[in-house]
Image (cartoon, rainbow, N blue to C red; front, side):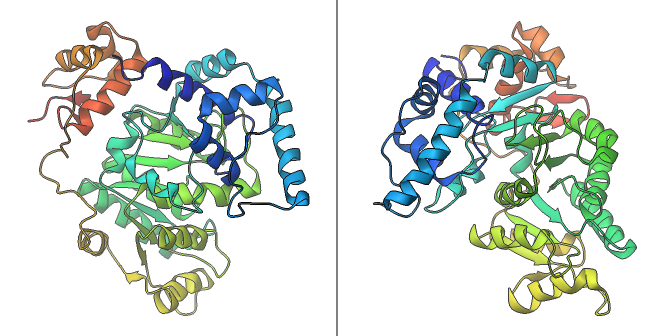
Length: 389
């Protein structure tokens, strides 16, 4: 059996197509997928069939007007589904170096399962770009977020904190925006790996000024999105995206935030998901620190000023695995993963080299490396992947 069996492949293919027609985190779609499976829901959309009967969000028996709105939503998805070419979507994504990761895949981050709680906006699947393994990177991670219109103080604190977190093998997750996000990504990437969560297709550089940074990060880290190739960001997508930033990590640090900053939205998701919430204090005269002070005063956020504070806050509740050695889980290797493991040298090699040596495709090699990393059988290094020391 390969990493995905044929049923899993059909489910992942359907989920990839659904990202092209339905908004991320849709509660109704999530309920349908849980009840009927992605392949069945997608087949119904393509065929123009009526929506399957499932509980509608929190209302078991919606009134006729509410059902009419849902039916119009379904009909819109169905019309869009008729225009989707699954082979073209997956082929264009692969050509851009973008892969699709579905729930149950070796690279799927287990923390996202927290979004499956009642009322949670679960993720239907993720588009991933980069040489890192998403699940492995998120095992020991922290979100660092804040204002786009950051002050010099905020960018300095974010950069210093991210650099020191990377020094302690903690991966920084953020949203790729200007200001605090960008400062954190650049510093973390300079000393380790980082994860960028975007609200657009991964072939769309937004913001445009971070195109070079995104390309650099993709070499060792990853870029993640719920939107397919070619999708440009819409205002509502940023708020929906923020729940992923909070869900992927055991803790979120807000470095700077105005009273209406989007970083406060990420903070609210962290609280809902029972993650550790932290904030950096700033000058009482700074409008960019008002949101942080609200978090400290009213939300009982932990007060942090450096990386050691962050690790102490998150580690205190046992959410950060120890630095010494990879996290190990039980694993029964399939034939392809076993070949990939045999092809990994002790000195380390990139995924393309491992794929060629094992006689597998790059996509299969990367998925197998993710499974092997989760089992503690391989680990990241500067050259790519190596056997653990």
